[in-house]
Image (cartoon, rainbow, N blue to C red; front, top):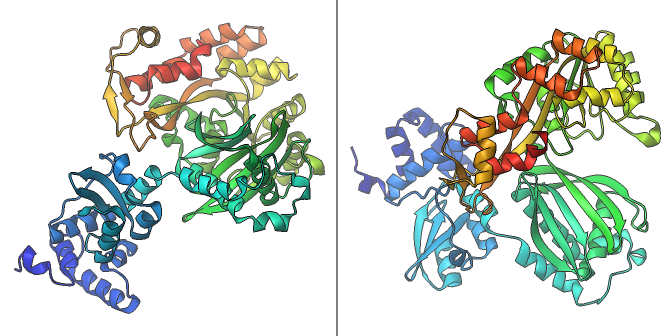
Length: 568
């Protein structure tokens, strides 16, 4: 058998090692080499594309082949001084990331440390010795996205037109053609949106102030300052958004909304845009709908096992109504979509009425609310009844007409799913009463109510134990009186943008509508009476569900208090 040193000079060295590692067979290697010669591709790329090996397998084999260590970028922080040595364009061109400066050497994590041209380019740009190390390509790409910010390039683009005017640009004189011709503002907006997608933002806020334009991203439900632009950039930016979203660029006083799509890397992203006039000028908010992160399965949302089992039983009901309660931004739409996604679409006719249709399903009829055309939730729901539906999803119950129509649909043999604004599960019933639905109808149709919130997840890459404040400890012990735990929080790292949190999970309160609760509602019981009865039947409150996630190290007491403190 040849040694690793002998193999180092052979063209098939990595392939041979993958065979020895048991990842592929000799026949698979021979076939991949044939494809490599015909398509003029890298052998590793061929093997990964064919699904025979993973990028991690290739990195391990290449590490053995070249005797170069693998750097796990999930566990290493990119040093800012190293990042300043190499421009983003170079990093993306060669798929590498500068990791650290050690003495007179720049440590660089590379997809292919054998790329002599890349190393020579790095030497020329950094004026330092290059110490190449090996990384998994996907991790390198993620590290580039997390480490390099678009702020510097945005400032360069803005400077191309900011110096031409001291005050706001009169957008009335702009035309679609002239705006598109302003490459700097086009590039600026593209960079703002691309950076937001890379940062996992759900919304971009473009906010005019006295002397600047404030750009903020909403990440994991919390707004963060992203950058600040000159005041002169406001009107061109808003005009560019209006052109993309097919709004009227000459209209400034009336609120407008629209939508468009962009590509960020290999991802397709839908953008919902809204503008409104403020005392400092027009403000714009862009809602990001990333299709690659569109749908979750119910078990991925954060349900406790027992609650998930009960909720899935509810979804198997032939008729009746299931409501999901929570404020705007609490994840009710995500839960509705996850619920519909697990239902049988072959034997049951599923129809939705939404405002807007955020994500599209196969084999489901989805109707968009269009008030200008006379299609509201209530009128759309009535038209759905003529489409022979088995299951109806109503995006949101906002008014009495919609509530009463939805109840009638549930009474006539349909399963109705919808969301409604309410503080907790028990409050949903009284929200329906406020909308004019009779108590006996509510008790007849409701199968169950799910209230929810979203809390940020502690970043697993920088999670450390800590001593909580007195307020946090007291709040935890109120809901978990017999439990002790180790408290965890994120210390802050590149992966979580130094917030200590990465991603979100749901906090749930499931109230099955039992016979006792139906009788209590008809008898005129209060919200607290219904909640007390539900807890006796085993309902886990929002606060307790959140604190159970604290016990598991998923989130922090402060994050639970921030989202559900008012529920008690």
